[in-house]
Image: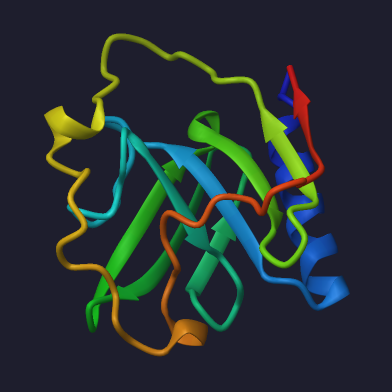
Length: 146
């Protein structure tokens, strides 16, 4: 049986877009996740997944993938759906959080992956560059789903 999680992630993403909000995805970074080095903090990353910040965005039942610019260089981002911990609107924090799904011993913490440093953060146009490490605003209304 397929999890409801990918359907909920896509639904919240579409709701954000329909409302004119900026959709963000928070995810755990491990050996199965492909993100540019230096952008994860404490084994997690938060990314702007709006259409003007990504190219070739795909959200299927197994993963979220897209291309995005970081520090002027194009990177292909791959996040297993199991690693998605939240999807929400930047402007008001409304969205949904998910219980962590542990898939094995392949987890890396930020230090082990060398991805908890701020070097190389994007300096481009915010609308064309994923914004990282932007948690939901205070008082956000994320619902945790098990």
